[in-house]
Image 1 (cartoon, rainbow, N blue to C red):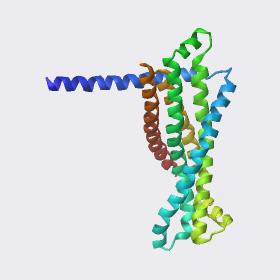
Image 2: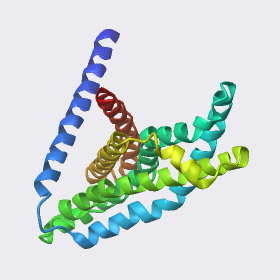
Image 3: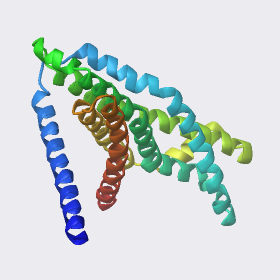
Image 4: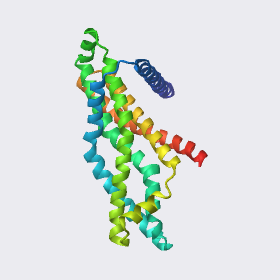
Length: 260
């Protein structure tokens, strides 16, 4: 009896998982079908403001700390080999290849993804989305397409901003210990950064931004069960976005390494 119950639970879990994946793929397909003019430009700009400008304080503090901490952690290892002069190059490679895209995406998943899931979830359970459909407007284009475009477009901007602030934090730490000039630091840091590094990071953040936007809007747009559903939508948006970002990071790094 216990074996049958366990089999039933596993079967139901798999059905729910693959059913959810299928619904998400349908949602993505609808997004691309709705990605046609005319666009809701005012709403897109407003969402870009929320995603970009309002994320700057958290991104600034986090990136500055990342630059300082990574430099502090790396110096002792390089000092053992008398190679502290390589520190600017090491920091730049680590930040622009991995840390800046990944940390930016995780911050956006936690802050932006949860906001999108909660906002659309509350609109769904209070029947505001249904009211928009009745009033002959297209809620999917206004609510979903605008937010996904905003996260897709703004995440690369935030990534480059985070990379700059992280390098500034790293420079201040190196200046305090090695007294390296600003010009020398950035020449050494950027001489090891290739076009492939910047291009792969740019592609990463476009994909991360799209994933965060589409998962957040999907969870919120399909929320149910009242206020409890709003909380579940916000939580699911964060968890699913972060998990997806890590999976995409592994895949993109593997593909990029094939070209190196």
